[in-house]
Structure formats: structure tokens, C-alpha cells
Image (cartoon, rainbow, N blue to C red):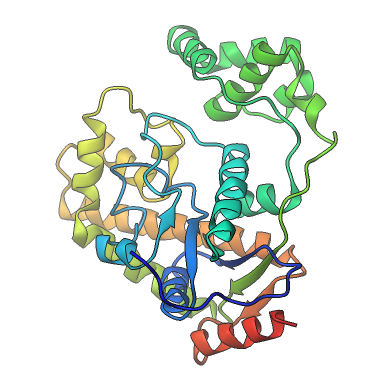
Length: 323
């Protein structure tokens, strides 16, 4: 639907605005609040939201929220498929150009810091993913095991193989795919020339009180359990082609639930309690990694999301960015 709100008038040096932060810090709520005031379109920066049929465990925006403002890069992949940081960077760059051509501002929202880095800092010019080659590699792994493919990788790209454990399916697969497509080792691409990304002003939601964030994480995981996370993963387990080594099934919450269901098809109250503990612990670890990434970005504009009016603080930063 048409958005009558005015655009955010940033300094022309900025090509977009971002809202980043650890999980459960209120990024979606702030994005929707800004969308009510300005002409924006939201680009999701979340490696889990790209997958169809994974709604509860990803805290995917509701249908009502998605209807309030155009959203992009949500529900664009089947859980059996992969989606790389390089693909995100290309898709997001194209979308940003399209959104700006419509007279609106791209608002990038999410917590997948590798995606932000790929977009803003540029990526080594790696070959595009080749589904046919990847399928061939996965078929070989199913027959011989990932350690055997790790040994193969060691013969063609010992630098990459040395830093990967023998069962790291995703990274071994990608490294072998790059070799088979290009004839070059994955490690040979690092440090090569990069294509610079767009300049994006980043609002970073960072709590000052770790206990506040831990409480929010626990509340969110409880809400997911009550909303049917276990049933959602049970349904995904029935899908042919899905297995726990896929990137989609390694997402926080899904991995822990899959492992719990491996132990018992019907989860007892005790098993649910153990799942809850593991899911909350994994979410805390994710939040810690996200904060570490953010603190390595010196140009971000920090907003204490556990203190005061977050929207007012964001609007203050936006006013400063107009200069």
C-alpha cells in the first residue's frame, strides 16, 4: 500500500539507515515505529528469516506487521537451500537502489552481523553458488561422510582445510564447491580486491544491563515454546531433504529442538524444560557474539535499548545524520 509519510532526509553521503542489535532488543518494534513516520521500506538482515515455513522459532514479523510497510528478503528460500552472505550483499544492494528510486529510504533491520559486514565492507569476489555442484558434493558426503570430503579438501586447499573441523559440513561443502567451479582454492580469494558496499548509517541497540537482555531472551523463548516451536520443528522433520546439518536447521532454537526430538518424538515436561534451558543458553551465546561484532564497528550510533525512549533516541540520531 502507498505510504504517505515523508522520506527520512539524511545527508546524501548516506545511502541507507540500519537498525542492528542482539536478539530480543526490539529491532522490529523500532523499525515499525520509524515506518509510521517516514517513507521507508525494510530490508531484513537476518539469516533465519529468509526461510519459508520457519516462523515461530525465528520470531518472524506477523502478517499484520508485514502489511504495515514493504519488507524484503523474508521467505525467499526453502529450508533445504542455502543463502550466503555474498548473495545477501548482492540482493540488498539491488534492493537499496530500487527503494531509493521509488523515493524512499532503505531501512536495513536485523542481527546477522556477517550480512552487515558483507554489505558495508564488501566481499572477496567469490564464485556464485552452484546448486548442482553443491548437490553432487552432498551426495558424496552422504555416501562417504564429511571427513572423507575434508580429506579431499586438504589436497586442493590445505589452508582452508586446516582451519575447518572434519564434520563442518557447510564450510567444507562451500570450499569444495569453489574449487570445483573455479579451479582455485577458497583461501586464494581472501585479501583480493573487494567491491566497496554502500554507506549505511547504523543505529545499534545495545543494552547497558546484561540481566535485562537475559530476561528478554528467556521471555522470547518461552513465547516461542507456547506458540508451538516444537510442533513447527516436528513438521519440518517430516520434510524430505531436511537434516540437522543444513544452515536452516542450525539456527538457534531449531537446532536444540531438533536434537531434543532425536531423543524422543513426544517431549515430556522434563524434556521441554531441558530444551528451554538449552535454547535460552544458545540465544545468550548468540547475543554475546552479536555484541562483539557490533563493538568492532566504531561508526555505529549506540542507543541504550534498556533505558529511556528508544524511538526518541533514534529520532535524535536521525536529526544529526541530516547534517
